[in-house]
Length: 65
Image: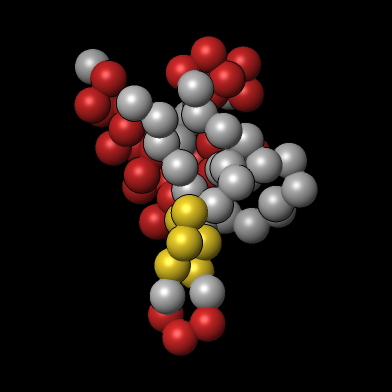
């Protein structure tokens, strides 16, 4: 199972993103090497941290056990 980030578009629409930012991974207490081993995609261009994406990461980690 892979987890994808969410991107907010105009008009409150959403779409799947390219990956999570390093800041989001840091907030969820995941280092880059572990994220890659778990199959979590990383978008190195993004600098923003969205709370929804951090919640998705934490939920994904809980589901792994």
